[in-house]
Length: 389
Image 1 (cartoon, rainbow, N blue to C red):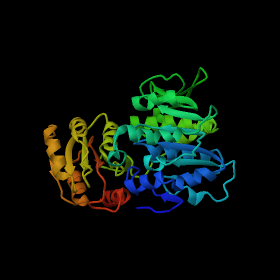
Image 2 (cartoon, rainbow, N blue to C red):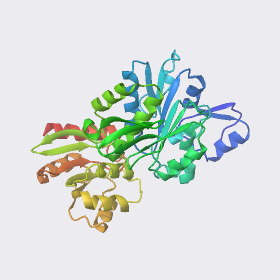
Image 3 (cartoon, rainbow, N blue to C red):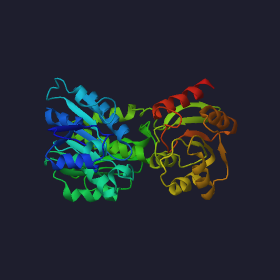
């Protein structure tokens, strides 16, 4: 256990909040803090903060690009790229910090005060650590701590758990929705992304202007519009960056088209919810899906029910193949193949089967650790093989 320390600096992946040594130390008066908390204590400039179960990295990256395009010195970090404190040296107060924050980073945060902050969505993840959805949601909700009326809480109107947080907000609440109008905020309607503030509607851009596709990416864009507008970015800058932004590596990344068949790398689909969002981005279906990897043992019924509608052939790899195959059969998926631990085998099989208008999608719904160091390595291997064809 911990004995006699004044301060414990805890890293996100280590020592769960509920574990006894940490609880004992806190009871004895030890201050438990973290790298991000230390950064927030000393950060002199405005903070734009992003959390959520899915979409954090795309939204954070997009917000960072918009803020850079305004000409302001911009630091992007946290749960993405570099730790924030590594970039804290000599930040002028005119700078802006764009922080991606995980629930693990937020659960010990007290001093954050974000100019604009969002929870994109809350789906079951990391319940091994937070024990309950309530605990997980409560950790994420800390992103809005210490806000006042000059700060903005950007809430997902389509996520009941997130929308219900509005009553507890101390900042000004704005919403985003892909399903219809919002009282105040940004929404998607008739193919357009619309900003609604102070009773006035402004079209920011059309969906056809974006390189990003899929409902979840429209959500990410709407959240980014509100976050950056709240942080002072002019609309014309926001509009231009949205039109230029190509997305994040390993997230529904278009690799190449061979004989009318396009190959997509979604290696960042490391859980079932993320991969479902990828499948939803192809409403016309006709996918050859490569899935599987290190199995998180999450329920598969919803994922396979959606795959049964969108996927023509399911190719399974890695540790999870057997459990995934059983769930796929139960969901009525007819054409299921397995290529063991060979990504190359999966791609070559997909290439043999695929005919336009089909597309080949790597979206594993699993971690990568059975075959690779991380999802980035898995995605690069996929792209390397596809580009060598």
